[in-house]
Structure formats: C-alpha cells, structure tokens
Length: 500
Figure 1 (cartoon, rainbow, N blue to C red):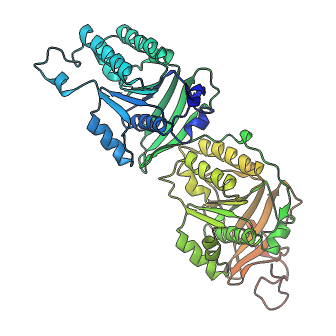
Figure 2 (figure 1 turned 120 degrees about the vertical axis):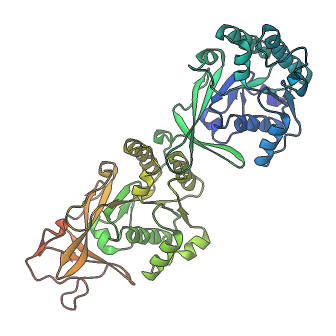
Figure 3 (figure 1 turned 90 degrees about the vertical axis):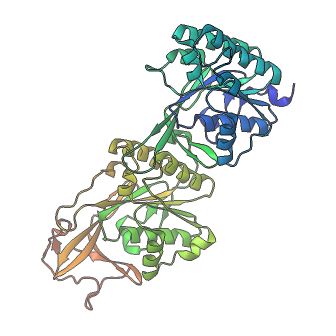
C-alpha cells in the first residue's frame, strides 16, 4: 500500500473546500453532493477525480444522466482533459434501443437490479480509488418508491465499503419533498445552491450539511463557478485569525486631520469617513493611502463607486499621483462591480491582500455600493462586523467611506455603522458669505482624546488644507450657520489659518 493510501483524508480538489472540511474528506466513505440542476455538482465531481489523477489515484465516473461526449465537452470548457479517468455510461445506445430485451429506463425490479449490478461490475473491473455516481435521481425513478430506493443505496454503500474507495453520489434534488433518507445513509452531505436576483449575476453558495467524525466550518459559504472550475470562499470568522502587532499611531498626511483625531490613525482600528457626495471623502482617503505608501507600506483600495481612471485623474490634479505606486505593486486598486461580486468573495480578496501581500492599510469606497452586493442591511452589518474585527486583529488601518443623502440641512444615511467604527470623521457642507464651504469634525475615537472642534477643510492643488476651529460660527453642522465673530475663512489674506 502506498504512503498516499495511509492518509486518513482525501483532497476534494476544490480550492477552499478542504479548508472548510478541516483538511478534506475522510477516505473510503460515501458522500452525497446535492443541488438543483446548474448548481455545479458535475464540475465539483470532475475536480474531485482530476485531483485524484494528479495524486496518482485512479478514478471512475459512472453516469446515468450524461453521455461521455457531454462529460468530455464539459471538462474541455474548463480547459481539462479526462484522459486517465474511466467513464462508464449505464445508459448506452443499446439500452435505449426499443427492441432491446431490457431498458434501464423502465422502472422494474429487473432493471433496477441490472443498474446496480452494472455499477458493481464496473468497479470490480477498474478498481478505482475515487468514484462519482451521477445521478441518484435516475435510481429514484427506477426504484419507484422510497423503500426500494433506500435498499439499493444501502446495497451500494455496503459494496463500496469493502472496496476501499471514496465515493461521491450526485443528486439533483428532484424529489418532491427532498430525500432526507439519503442524508442518513451518507457519511457526509455537501449541498450546493444557486440563487438568481432581479439584477446582476447569479450567486452560488455551498453548505456542509453533515460530516461524520470531522470538525467542519458550518453555515453558507459563497463560491464561484467559472472557467477553471469551482472556487469556494470560506466564511470569515474573525476569532480564528489573530496577529501580534504594535498599536502605534500613524499620520493621515494632513496635520489638521491628525490634530482632530488626537494624533492620527491607530493601527488595528477602523475609521468611518461620512458625509454627502462631493464633500471630499475619497480625497481624504487617498491622502491617507498615499501617506501610508510614502511610509513604505502596502495599501489595498477597493473602489465600488467610480472608475480607476477617474480616481487617478482626480487625485493627480490635487497633487497626489498614485500611478507610480500602482506600477511598483505596492498599491492595489481593485474596481469592483457589486452586482458581480459576492460578499464572501470580497472578504476573501481582502484577507488574501492582508495575509499574502502584507497590506497594512485597507480602504473600502464606499459602503453604499457594497450594500448592493448584500441581500439585506442585517447581513451587511454581520459581515462587516466580522471583516472589521479581522482587520483590526491583523493590525490593519481601515478606512470606510459612507455617503449620505442631502447636502445642506438634513443629511441621513441608509445604514448606520457608527457602533462598529473605532473612529468617525464627519464632513458637512455649510453656507457662509454666499459660498458653499466644507466643515470636518472628529465625532468619535476609541483610542485617542480627539478634538471636539469643527474646522473648515478645502481641497486644493496643493492637497488638503484644514483651518482653525470655527469658534465664531453657530449651527455649522446643520448647514445654515450664523457668523458671530471675526475669524477669517481659508484663503482670506488676513488672519489666515496654518495649512495642514
């Protein structure tokens, strides 16, 4: 017996799935893979057999539902060859001949027995270590009733138990009320589901319903099915990921904002930058990112709202050229279509950037667009709680941008993440002397004694300018203040505040 056969686990060949299973499937057991048509069962099964071929393990694909040319075409669409894997059609052209003495499509005891014996015979001849049986729905039709179906599955289970092979039974869930008897027979159950929304790409999720003797990650995990096969994105659990880091304070690149925050941004914390559209939220986050890059750090910027070209052009006009840092590979800017990317896949990309690339600053711009990728606000809060906790535990400086409705007067948000945030920078437009100006204030900081003042902020070709505290104004945050003093605004010749 080879050393590979001594191992108690067998890899599924599906990226991410082995991690969910804590190392893979227990060898020499029968597993049920269920899902509606189009959910990805056949692709998963082919990846399972191809991984076996890679490890030098023989594989057998037994099909009642697809022909060999169809299977080979499906594999070719992913760039795979099935050479070296045995394919066996239980429904052959001879079996479909109306003049044939027996037809496996005729629901009789004789034909059901012939089908079972055909499976056993093929296994005896090829002696595979990995087997895929596709699919149980045809066996169910032949059996006609649950008792006979269960007996046949039990017969196959006992047969395979003595043949030292790991088996995947595929089921398309065509039974009216679901066949839970299969769950009790199988050693483990993996369920695939496909969901279609009113707009955007279809979403797919995987759940390990049952797995005897294995500690696995429960719940739903997003997965993608594209050219190259299935990729599962394990649901993020922050408690499983902790790192040691120094909780130091770093500069934003604008002295006035540093002063508002009580010294700057603290590693292992997240800051919510909130305000109406056009107030300077993205520019502020770009300034923080550029400062981190100048410190020699790596930065990941996830752009949901605008295109990369627009971001680069606007930032360069304000004296913040990001292109050299993108070219060097230290700045990762990923423009994301929320209609195409699942929340689980997004969390995976963030985690990959932190753990593999060593990213120390993460910007999410903005949460409003990210909300569109979620099935509801409740799920956004839960997922963001895990993601932010994970980033904090990794010592990452995280900036979250949240757009608000309205410009002057009442301003509101669709979501409230203030309780999840360690710090909050609040931007507001306000009217003064016939002009629309911008105010900034730090309204929350869990790690430093932040200022309680409200300052004017302007975006110029020289960068971000922050003025003195607006002590002579009343009602700035309401958007319609009254002026009661002599302090000049930014840009005025007399009594000009210090630039930050």
